[in-house]
Length: 526
Image 1 (cartoon, rainbow, N blue to C red):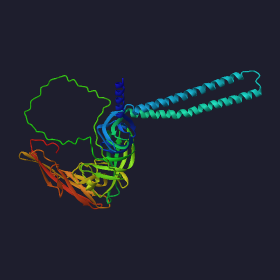
Image 2: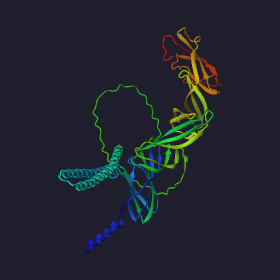
Image 3: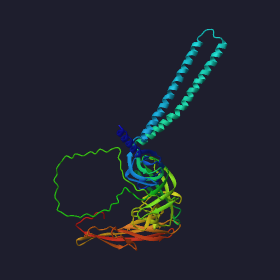
Image 4: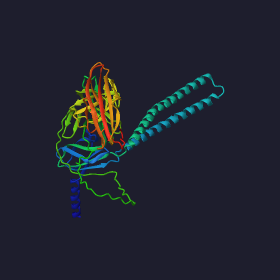
């Protein structure tokens, strides 16, 4: 018996020495770094640890988390043993909203019952009044007493009914709002997550922990406002970002950083595989039955991995553009609130004043009016991404254009809309147009007179564009005879003239070329 008691005492002490504490901790979102696709959420935990092993439970983790992206850093005299993520089905917005709808409905039903009681009470009073009025020989003083009695009772019941109605209407409105919100949340009804941090401390100690993770269903896209006062002023570029998120949790008053990185795109370098040649063999047509394997996915999953403890250095910034070797981060100074599943939030990033050279570009073959184009040199310094832009010229909305940063030119061309006061004309030169057969070949000649008129009261710089056909066959020869100072792109046949047109004057150029081809063949697109 003594041996059994001693053994039980040892087991009890062993259990106490290695008991695990479970502690729920609050962790607010401090900062969100939004990539073009996905976002990194940073949370902070400030708590106290008792001696031994403690499991810290951090709730309200995005339901679109990439569980492999969890990073943990901390300050304090403790050791991080494990990190575990799992879905928390008890922390589901759908269930919370459903419970709220049920509670509001119960309150409405209770008021409806009280309203029905008041109605029946009023009916009983009126019925009693009819009985008394049918008595014969009712004295005047009795009649007055009866009227006063029923006035008091009916007023009391009527006031109670009115109060119940006033209490009921806000509840009905609240129920409608909750049902609408519930319908919206059902589209994103995945349960929120929970991160479990297992830590060990030799003694009681405070702990400052920072954890971060990457979540899907979030991102941003660039948007711009281009404002031009006149063709002598620089272009004012308002760089904006449309930020969206559907992570299942709201970002309330968080610091926001926008990154031009896109983790959704693989960073693996492409490899050139050998290009083997072989003779073509016609395939044999046959049929077979393919049975697909169906994998059962668990609703919750867990990953465990040790994380090294480290002190995290932080820096407070107002507005900063941080450029690394491959990406650019815009650290915004203000805090923002972006709700999950809501409309994208428009955020201002930067405002630039860019020196530009303005040209009127016209191609009368396609359009008799010119287009005003602003050319920005050294535009890379503005860190622009491809995106849609609203164009304002002389304080008027002109339309929309698109900024394409994928080009390799050092000049960014921004189309600012039609320049209606620069008009062009393209006419055939009849006495030059001819078709002759020489031996086995046909030679066709084409000639055009192209003119540009400036109806403005100031000189403008004009870029005139036209083209000559490009041969894709050695039997077809294109001979450019006259372009009067224009330049030709050999691969495209595009011809460009650049000149100035004085106020209220015109400029004229000639374009002449011939095409030679075998007379027994027909030419497409001539």
